[in-house]
Length: 385
Length: 73
Image (cartoon, rainbow over all chains, first blue to last red; front, side, top):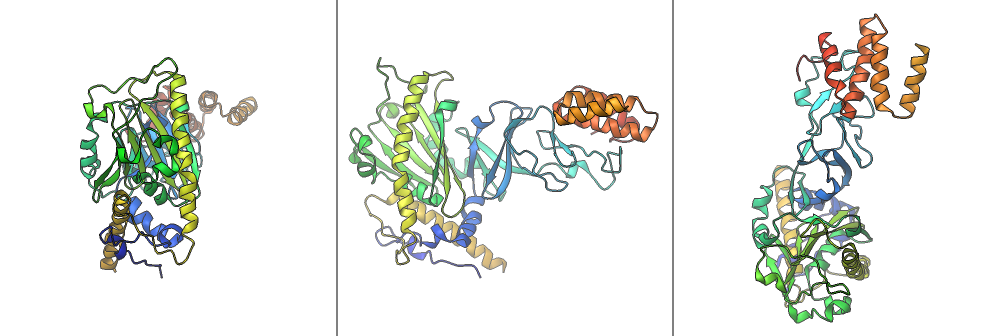
């Protein structure tokens, strides 16, 4: 029988709530339960559009064990398919590459268009006979996964029944409407990965709050103090933090990145950092944005895929490198924290922890969201039984 | 034909799909056996599809004319 945890204490008001029990960070059966309840049921981040900049670009991904293919079809549309042939379930694309024409299965050469249509089934009716009454091409296209691109993040809904992305995330899309415009990926020097020995949720939780900034990021605190930050809390949707004192990066000659056009004056000095539940961490500033797509790789391992974006297609490469380095330093400073919390989850008498009612609101909001998703999932399962 | 076989193997080894389209088409053109020709044409067609080669249309038409591909897709 599956291990069922009690998440009622998580859902209490923050001053008396406990965090999610240890099992939610270390138990494979709970990890599997959360996979369905939390990550498959809504819109999760898979990658970014910049991974497939040109028509025909295709990049295989493994998302919670599912082989997926992210590609840009012949019309320029980003699509996500199960990366498996409809014939024998063979993996279609093993490495990132450009699809020049059709996707040919390397096993028996069934061919698919980049829109997922089954184009040819060689020898399916015998040698040189490429049709058979039992094989209807119209019914055997690639299995497509719902996807939506927002701020260049490719969001997918594995369950297939979530509300439309823009409806599910209406508040956030509105809150950041100023950045709902073309974003330009900085290229190879503006992406990096961090491998974390922790559950994916700890990366989200740490990102939600500013409480840790003066202790963990003393450099950041030198100009953006704790009291300069504010909570962002939209119950059941997203949470994070903002600062009123964002300072633009400048090179020795005083040059900075170009600003996004037509944005509110608020952004002259404000910046916001939001955990878009379940697994994408995003930040916006007057002159750049970033997205961190978390790829869970088991209960105690997570990959952070970090991408930086600018307001113009061409920006100064030295400045970009400096910006990447600055964020790399900050994100690296968080590694010992999330990995330390992960090891802490093996202490059997740890009770999920207590929250600071004043400072941990955004973190508790995430715990509450996870708990509510689990309850919904468990109730539906019980009803089905 | 032995020379063609050797060239085909070489093209397969090199994953030279342009050569594979051409060589399988030649193989089809060099046989009077319709089934054998369609076998080769199928391979030429598949590699043409994979590489987005314009030859795919004509190869498909040849196969469709012999009832080996759907008449329209």
